[in-house]
Image (cartoon, rainbow, N blue to C red; front, side, top):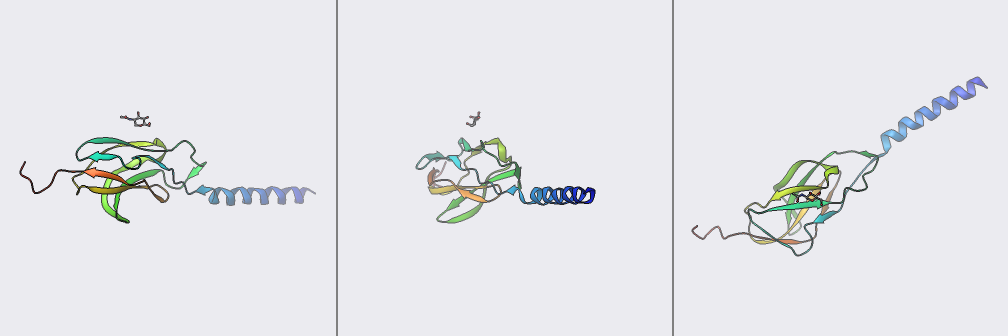
Length: 128
Ligand SMILES: *[C@@H]1O[C@H](CO)[C@@H](O)[C@H](O)[C@H]1NC(C)=O
């Protein structure tokens, strides 16, 4: 009897341990800004936001980064990094890139994409 109880306790402790290791949920909070079709201007600062309202109990990666993506390719252009994933927003100053259509890629546990938005930049071939 005692042995059975001990064994049951041991098994449940092992199960708790096992479930602790597996409840590290992949969390891809949806980007809520930029929204589809907005135009962001070079050198201006915008509040990029994601829905951080429902984090899983355990997050495998606490730190988020936002990259720029164009034509289905994630570019090596970092809009923001070192951001606590639960913060839900970060201020981004738009870098000097060609005017055109882009997406933001939110990297937390996995990567997820914003809708397409535009960046408007001055021509690099105009004297200023
Ligand atoms: C950015 O957006 C977040 C979420 O809506 C808000 O809490 C925060 O105050 C905003 N920050 C600025 C500087 O606008």
